[in-house]
Image (cartoon, rainbow, N blue to C red):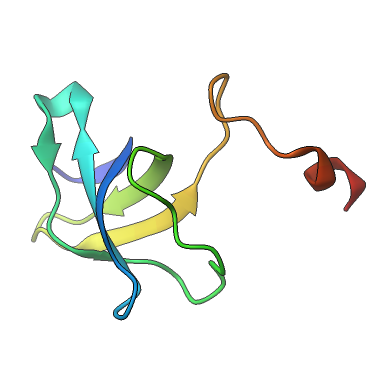
Length: 80
């Protein structure tokens, strides 16, 4: 896999700031540990919808939660 993918958090490692992501569109393939950028201040929880960018070597980045019809922004988001 290489490029932009969306998926769901399957595992988290709070101490290292890393997550594993499951990709239903790829037969439920689970990523290796992916780092979160330093600007992500809230660790996504298992089952939450996230965006990732993967490279051809198996590495990549989970850039955090993304909004969808099922995962909408909180009301306070609109006050910013």
